[in-house]
Image 1 (cartoon, rainbow, N blue to C red):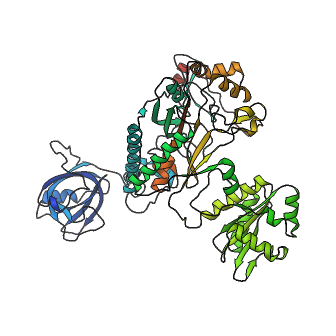
Image 2: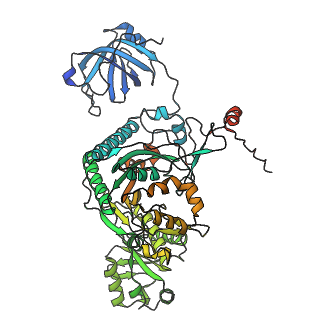
Length: 588
């Protein structure tokens, strides 16, 4: 039954024929999308990545072709030779809906088993099943269109950067393990037994070395690897647009990426973003949105009403003021139900708050348990401060300032998921992050990475927790899509940062000696940034997860359902590498 193509050559794709091709002899090849047998005619929708063309098998034209077509089934691979005709009944849903090909011959190139989920129509398989048979999922039109979009975005970015003097340089995948925030994926060396390479978490040190080498403007659409606990929107391997510039500061980098995003969204989506992009300091973002990743498509700005609330007779508010806490609120442009208010109160408790207080703005004033504790003047002042109007619901949290900000930030996010955004895409820059933070073990660590230039160098040894970084993140629709910083280009300053982080001179030499040495040979001032390419594509494509824009993604447990990786390897391979695996002891 199965035949070879032999001298048949495809003349057209299944998505390009039109009225101008009527009368032409063509050869099409693809998958059987669907088949309809009307007794004296067989209709086959033939599909490839470009679209679908209707093929008609008529015994009056070719009985042999008609007889073969009686056997074909969905997802069989066939080649059809025939002539283009105008369709009797046009299909406006198809690009090729005005024509059909009447078959004169057919070759069955391959057969297919019944697929575990349907290729056409509604998705009827679980995500794990679809990832297990990813090659079938890739045949779906919407999936291949996502990868067309991804390709267009990467092509645009390459062109944009090259027009501005950047050159793409590949950096190594097998490199040295250097602490950068997450665990490294380690690769054992067969030649040097007992020693390991690490897969790069990012090209950070290499791109800085390229600046020291005089490259001046570098970029790379780079693969990165992080062995960390996964969340819904993380992958162990991912792609980033990596950029570094010599003799540049934060303004140069931010302006470059603003221009890139403005032109990218205009070119790919026909969407004009707000320009220049709004800028907030880290402290401003936390105070006004409760997060350093604010979704600015929605209003609901957090506003401080402590100075007004302290005039009330409400004891909880007065106690908060006495303890130097904060009383802040947001406005939801909806009349929230009691059930919704109770759910938001539970959310606030997850962040350490005792709950929420609410005010509904009605025709005749406040409807709220707080009503009796405030005078009319104070009510008017709160309404004005929060820009609350009739039909709105005010949510208030009273507690320590950081608790209030976190709780209202989460409430703002939960509420925003239920209302229509005022903008389709909204960018915001967050800058001047703290340089340091304490980790879960109480140790000082870098907020971004230890190569970030401090803004307040004079405070480094006196009060490191007050030092701001010359860093910046780009946030889109509440998702951090990229970040960067001005880098440390001075040897002595880099050593000082390592010491403050508790990295001894001996450890610094062991981990970063090659980089420290490079800094002693005339490193120029430089700055850079990396964009999470998968996340950017997902947002532009309207997808909820980056897994949907990666050809062969892993699950949230870092497993590849298609290949079964990770898996055991032969004992002989481990012996070659000098590795012994400890057997797990049975529990019980």
